[in-house]
Length: 423
Image 1 (tube, rainbow, N blue to C red):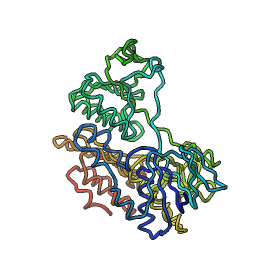
Image 2 (cartoon, helix red, strand yellow; image 1 turned 120 degrees about the horizontal axis):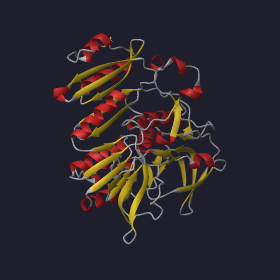
Image 3 (cartoon, rainbow, N blue to C red; image 1 turned 90 degrees about the vertical axis):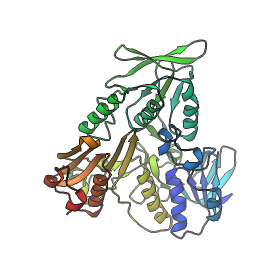
């Protein structure tokens, strides 16, 4: 088959690119290829509402089949691209079919990082990862028959799933090798608040603790417990691993594109060959922050100014930029990143990137379980971690996007409405 634009990957970034191309006036043929045997779906709910049974699988679907037909977008499910020939502009599927393309976009995403410790050699039952819909379906099916759950990794996915499973009546232990929860995403102050709140609700949190081995029943080949680096043993019917992801860069490497912790792209989503595009979790790109928010140390030093961002907002905005590049327009990707994580009754919303901050301001309303940490550099707002404080989050996003400030002295009063002091 032939197509004008071939998008390899049918998750958030790939879907948004296909939609944006049509919205931006592209009239050529579009083919989107996805490895999973599902219509494109939303991932964030897999560890929360879907696992807890609050939403059904159909509610996660991005668009109906009629939408793809109406937009003249060919969707190939359950199809893996095994080889790409950049010179011939040809991609080969795992079924041996060839797709000839005019423009190639890699939206290959990332895969769950696998755990390797003694006891897992036999691939025992009861070990789960949570990245895809099939992962979520397998985990959800296993939950009714287990009671003791161990979660390896105290990042967003691990904590979201831990809270969901605890809410379903399971005994849950979270094992984190680092000194704090969500250590890469929030400050020590916010991380400590998460530890406190999660322990209050009954989660067993083990920090600075590693996993030494997994115990497996030889007859059933099911896990029965885990042995930790501190010498403790914890019974486990189910082990959920959330230790990060690995960008899928194999096709990029096959094409000879530059890869460095992700597929390297410029501010227009172009890869190192200047023609192939890449979007989403698989990419590493110039820091998209507006110049006024970047730390001085990274100005003019591209090597230290590269970031890989895993968020829905990033996938959407970068895909919009890639659409413009397909159409021959140079529209620079510039954006204030934002993130969120729902963990039981704690809704964390993060606006901006706090790299290079020098000062913080804390706003707390304990009786409402609201807590905000604002990050400043030289008196200018850089970012915010907001827990159950959506108005603070929206105000900071508004200020950052507009290049304005929120004075630290006024923000320190938790009764101050931040939107009213933006200047």
